[in-house]
Image 1 (cartoon, rainbow, N blue to C red):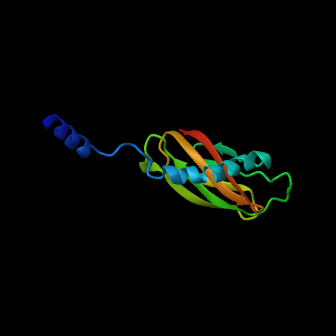
Image 2: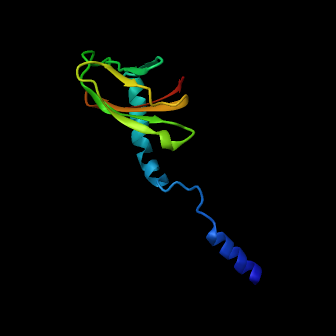
Image 3: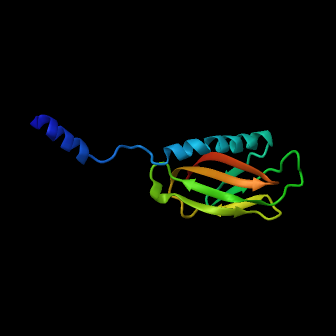
Length: 134
């Protein structure tokens, strides 16, 4: 009986498991994210991402259906896979142009994930890209 009681106390005192508390909410939004990711390739608007020693340059493509472009607004998340402490995000607004530049002086050397979420011509898009910052 003591063994069962001590095992129950031990299990209750352990920290919670690695269950993501937002697991179900993420599942609900998965379909919406999938549609936005797929829309990038359907409209042929995959952004071109270039980097040099100081900046990350993002060139947004105009949709084939509307070559005149349009205002691009949204958000970029810069995620460090090894630690969440360095994660950050910025608002994006290009006005009439299709370029957006980010000074990378705050980025540590290593792998980063860029998550772009933007609207253009009343379409919502989501795009993921991994980069290595020197």
